Image (tube, rainbow, N blue to C red; front, side):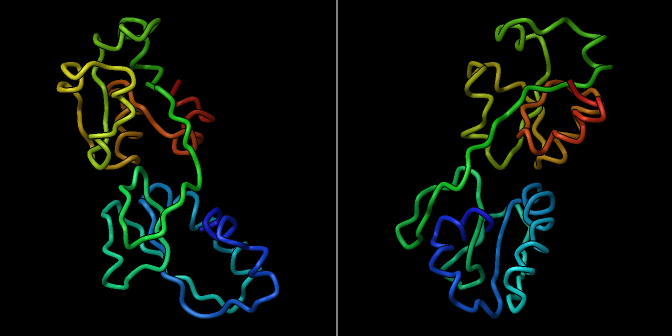
Length: 178
């Protein structure tokens, strides 16, 4: 929403009074950790706006009129929707300190084959892991259905995770992941 409103002409909206219900859909991790904390800023600027935030990794059907705006990772183009890239995400390869002290060191990309990898189900076909591993290596992944699940798996020593930088920020700051 932050970026979508900005990109779609916040300059045009400055003079208009924005009111009413706005249904916003977002993936679990992004919605809970970025979108919801932003709502006070949005509501301060537009106090008569009434957001309804739907946090889910399921893709909603816009033809049923449930969502006004949706934020999605790797969304496939749909002819009946206006889609716009609002951000690029930086992914990090991370593991817990305990995991790294007990296993072979990671010095190059090829070392990943010696470690369990943690991957998300909702973006497996376009997974960030495809940038680093061969298809055969991907077959051995531990698949977890959400970013928070992958994050907790890495913290608890399940293996190496590829996580968006914003999702891992707190764990990195607390030195739970390296």
